[in-house]
Image (cartoon, rainbow, N blue to C red; front, side):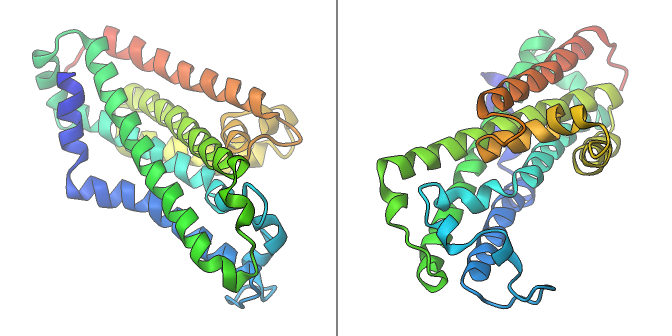
Length: 266
């Protein structure tokens, strides 16, 4: 608990709140506004004139899960933000030399790691809640001008969709964060771990997956996206959830193994 509390003090700094928290909410708000403007026929200067209208019609946004349709479209960006958060935090402990001080206050390394990861996970979960709430609120405000009927949003099924989207996004972000933590432990460099992780999720897997079908359907990026979408034609929701948990556990095992065995020389 001591490591958890101290980590939250660090995460509560203005730079972290605005940098990572602001990015999470900002992406969610931006895609929500663009999607509803597009659904309403507003020209936002894209090649097709209606732009994000091609992403979702008013009919789609009027469904029970229409309230969270927009925020789930930015799952890839949110997972990258989470990866960067975990990686920069853990790699920073090594680069700044504060890892030694941490192990002095808490010599049980696995417990120290667990406290840090729990704090980072709860931080991400809190900001996902804010992002989902902001997206729903913006959607409700813009719905009328976009021709979206929000009646089904406020039903039992609609609230279940909101809760499901929050849980799925949170799970995907924490799993991506654990992968980022593993990369940070292996490289001890924020720049390298974030670059490698982000490049893989955004470029390598989507590109290689175009001709290697297995990776394109079962890789981490595909699993995180499918989980946020509630399942796809290639991966069902339960399979996506299982894969996401598996990838997160792999990252956790690697981080635990490295921190418990590697000498701290910085």
